[in-house]
Each structure stands twice: as structure tokens, then as C-alpha cells.
Length: 110
Image 1 (cartoon, one colour):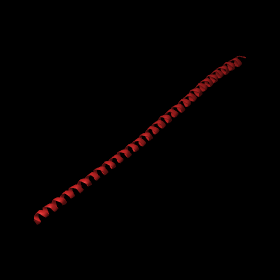
Image 2 (cartoon, rainbow, N blue to C red; image 1 turned 90 degrees about the vertical axis):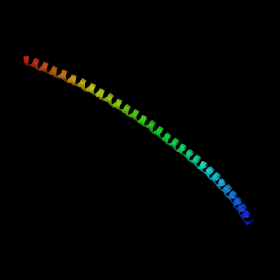
Image 3 (cartoon, one colour; image 1 turned 180 degrees about the vertical axis):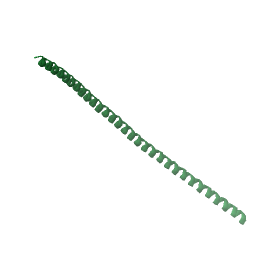
Image 4 (cartoon, rainbow, N blue to C red; image 1 turned 30 degrees about the vertical axis):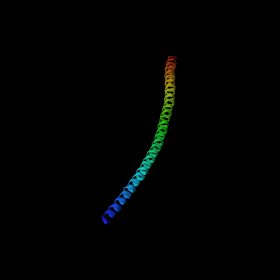
């Protein structure tokens, strides 16, 4: 009879242990799922933030590049203007020299 009681007690204890293990597993799985969900949510938030920063930097890079192109155009236009003025002044100097030669020749003749 003692043997039967031990078997019954062991069987009951075993069932209780199995129930406790099953409950612990369920709690653990729920906790793990919650942590996984939280981690995925935080990852998505961080990724969105990083993507926003990348877009901002890219927009600023393009804006800066366009500003540089504008400054280059202004400088090239000024260089062209100055080159034109230099060419014009050089031509005036050449004409002046020719006139001086002509006057000098005329003065020698007199």
C-alpha cells in the first residue's frame, strides 16, 4: 500500500511539475515575444530616424552642390567679362600704338 501511495504522490507531483513547467514556458514565450516585438519596433524607429537623417544630408549636399555651381557660373561670367575688357583694352592699346607710329612717321616727314 505504501508503494501505491508513493506512486500516487509521485504521479501528482509529476503532474504539478509538468503544469508548472508548462506555465513557465508560456510566460517565457510571452516575455520573449514581447521583447522581440519591442526590439523590432525600436529598430524600425531607429532605422526611420537614420533614413530621415540620410535624406536631410542628401538634400543639403545637393543644395550645397547647386550653390557651388552657381558661384562657379558667376565667377566664370566675371572672368569672361574681364577677359573681354582686357581684349578690348589690348585692342585700344594696339590702335594707339599704330596711331603713334603714324604720327611719328608724319612728324618725320615734316
